[in-house]
Structure formats: structure tokens, C-alpha cells
Length: 436
Image (cartoon, rainbow, N blue to C red; front, side, top):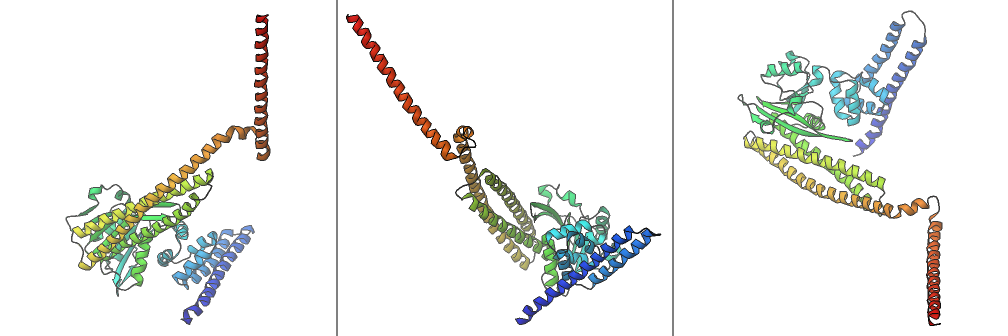
């Protein structure tokens, strides 16, 4: 047990050393570029290009010596400007591995700086080697002839890439934009060539943004084809597991079932985050005093949680439909049937949690609205007096108000008494005159 503990400081020191080397190269590059730009010399652009290339070559060679995990940790530790500069020098055939390791926020930055533009970025083919999925580099149609894929994954593919992949495997690959327009009754079917077509939604939960992303699946000649418009955490997780765990998958249907299972796990994790957020909101709601600003913030958080909870519920129900279709079509082996039933049991459990959260949402909403009504009633009852005494400390204003009310009552009492006495005297005088 002592060996892993002893290795941690060493690995940390290596990371700090690599990070320092990358930062030093980038700093030197910026300094030399700034000096060259200030100089007035012949063939200025050529000199600047040579200086720039020198440091980029050193950076490129340094990153080549590092593993994908080391590159990911170094890139995450860099500033945004340095991160993008270093990312452009990572070898293209290692970009996919690095993207699977870095965090979601960093991944979004890297994809924006180096977007999917080639077939290699749009298309991933995986073969089964020694019980593990192995990614095969695909740059053109000719490369497909040299592989025996079990899974072909396309992310935001262009029309030309979809066309030549479809022609090679003799099937039609839909445009990801078309997947959202498919009628509910036509989302799961088997065509005349015994190819299984399915269209399902997968949850994408980013900070401040959650949505369901449609994915088209085709099972054709024991090969799974998946087409979607953007990268999803579930797919990255599936690729990572299948690469590292021997025997994790054995055919395209295994990959499909594991994708659905991973999506249910991902939905459960998102649901746990909703639970945690509502616990925090619940403590605020149950506090003695809730201001209007706090109530507005609480209502906003409740609305976000309700939206995510609804998306999770819709997502798992969609997954249930897909799994039921596979079971009814008798497309699965006995082991795959058991895996499917386990996923369905997990979905049943999630259904109960989403229903509970809907009830909790209603309770928190009613309690928050109740506090808002109480605050409004307080303002209405005290608004006129508060306006008249604005700027006066409340002990003085309320004391003066009490004294004024007392003085008014005292004055009213004596005025009424004086009027009664005067009326009695007038009555007495009138009676005396009448008798006299």
C-alpha cells in the first residue's frame, strides 16, 4: 500500500515540471514575438514566422513526449490564452483521448478553438481487439476497407461523410437535424434489409443548460452506427470503459445497451444534483424570514430544478420505450435480456424519485409564494405610515404617534363634554324663560 502513496508526490512534481516547461516556452514565444514586431527590418514577416515556428516546434515535441492524461492535466492548469495555444500543438490523433479526460468546461473551450472539421473528427470506428474496443483512425473511404468495426460513431458529420460511409456499408445515415422531426410512431422499426433503426434522446446536463439531445442508432450487419450533432458525456464514458475493461462488450447490441445503461446512470447523477439543490432551497424556505429578493432567487432555482427533473423523466421514459422495442423484437440474447431488465428496474426506481421531486417542487413553490404574500400584506398595512415617517427612527415615530393619538382622544373627550354642558345650560335657560 505504500507504493501508490509514495508515487503521488512524484507524479505531482512531474506535472508541475511539465506545466512549468510549457508555460516557459509560451512566455518566451510571446516575448520574442513582441520584440520582433517592434523591430524595423527587411523581410520582417519571414523573421517573425521563423521565430514563431521555433517555439511551436519545441512545444509540439514536448507535448509528444507526454501521455494523454499528462497533457490533459497540463492544459487544465494553464490560463485560457496559454491553454488554447498549447492545445493547437497536440497531435491530432491524440486529441480524442485528451478531450475525454478534461472537464466539460475546458472541453468546450478546446472544441471551439479546434472544431470538428475533418472526417477524422467527425467519424470514429471501433474494432474489438483482445476483448477491448480499439479506435481505428479513419481519414477517408479507403481506410474503411482495412477495418472490421463493431461500432461506427459519427458526431456532427457533413453530408459528404455521411454519404461515403453509408455507401460503403450500404445503408442510409440520417442527418442529425432530421432526427428531431421523426414521428413518434416511426422512431423504432426494422427495414427490409433487417437493419434496426432507433431514435432516442440522451440527457446533456451542463451548468446552467440542460437539454435532451437526439441520437439516431442503426444496427446493421452486427455493426452499431450512431449519429448525433454534438458530443455527449455518456458516449465518452462508454468509449473509456470499453477501452479499459476487457470483455465489457462483445457486439454492437452490447454497445447499444451499455449506452442506454450509462444514460440512466447519468440521469441518476443529475437527479442527485437536483436533490442537493432542493435541500439547500428548502433550508432557505423554512428560515424565519425570507425577503422578496431571496424569494425571487428561490423561485428561479425551483424553476430550473423543475425543468431538469422533467427532462430526466422524459429521457428515461424514452429509454424505456427503446428497450421495450428491443425486447419485443426478440433481438437480444438471454444475457442481454437480463441486462435490459436490470436497466428497466433502474428506470422504475428513477420514476419514483422524479415523482417525489415533483411533490417537493409544489411544496417549495407554495411556501415561497406564501412568504411573498405575507411580505406584501406587511407592506400594504404599513405603507402610508412608513411614507409619512420616512427618515425618522421608529421608536420616535411610533412614540409620537401614540402620544398624538392620546392627545386626540383627550381633546375629543373634553370637547364633547363641553358641548354637552353647554347644551344642558341652554336647555335650562329656555325652560326658566318659559316658566317665567
